[in-house]
Image 1 (cartoon, one colour):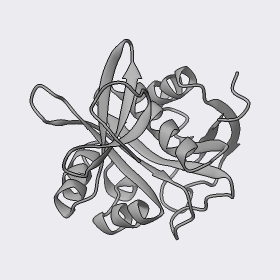
Image 2 (cartoon, helix red, strand yellow):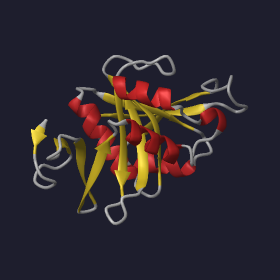
Image 3 (tube, one colour):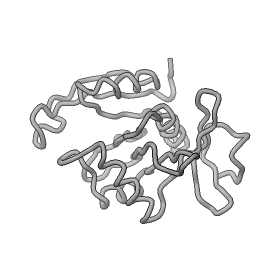
Image 4 (cartoon, one colour):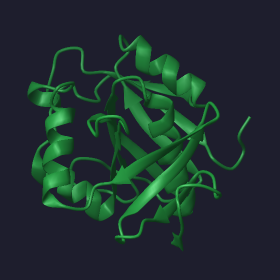
Amino acid sequence: MRQGRFEGVVNKTLTDDRGNQYIQVKHQNRFFKVNIAQTEDEFREVLGFDNRFFRGKQAITLQVLQLISQFGKVVFYRAPENGEIQGVSQILYQSIPQQEVRMGEAFLYGTAGIGHGQVLFKAQEVLAREANKALIRGTVRVENTQTIRALFKAGYRIMAFDPSRYAALEEGGGRLVMEKDLIHEQ
């Protein structure tokens, strides 16, 4: 990791003066600081925000969130004006019981937010590249057109439809499988 201020190096993981890692992302000619959750309080705060968007069987638990942080990263974006979380995301580099991750790939476990999807997608890409991953894969509900459009904008493509993805958990549990090639980008 590079020790640095919030300027200069673009789209890279940095470390602040207190030793906390964050991802600096440039988007629409502005710099964004995307934090990496490291403390119990941060995990609980991310969980609270995430649960506003995902309920019931789709909700993530604190234990799964902490497991993801052991085999990937849990990130969040705070609005600089008021310090409130505006977006959260999880990315895996290795498999966990809830999700298989293939060799050379990162898996976009989940993203939720209020208008900062592109910033979070860029942060995930930084993390995947720094972990030497060639591809990011994720799944999305067919009816979630907002996320599908956001992923297209971020460079993802639809690769398949998995009709049984969450069939045991919910009716109509199929998902689109979307991925972004980090080596042969278009």
